[in-house]
Length: 127
Image 1 (cartoon, rainbow, N blue to C red):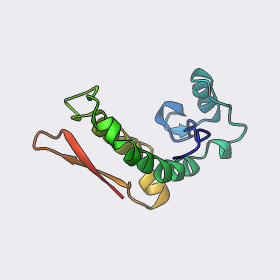
Image 2: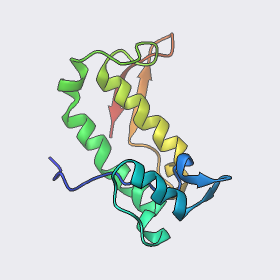
Image 3: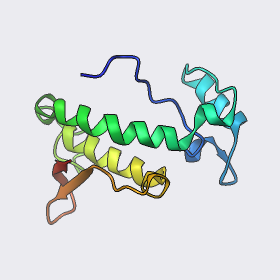
């Protein structure tokens, strides 16, 4: 289990923290203020590469550890996923793509969603 000090701070490449598609330290800090996160003093403090590295290293492992608990709970969006676990898989996969972690790191996502014929996520392969 990871210590509770691992908090996913809003990175520079979050589309909600960019201005016209470009990184903005001011917008990152405004977003962070709005969600009670510490301010970034420099652009390096909000590094997208560091965020993606941690996201890839920590999240899949934690999701795998919590699978039994999450799979027993209903999905908040049954049209996308059949359980809370598969909903989290779908969201993680979308975030990895949205934040361009694959190109920043030159590594694929460690989580591969498995979908049914209707496109609903029903399981996942976690490497």
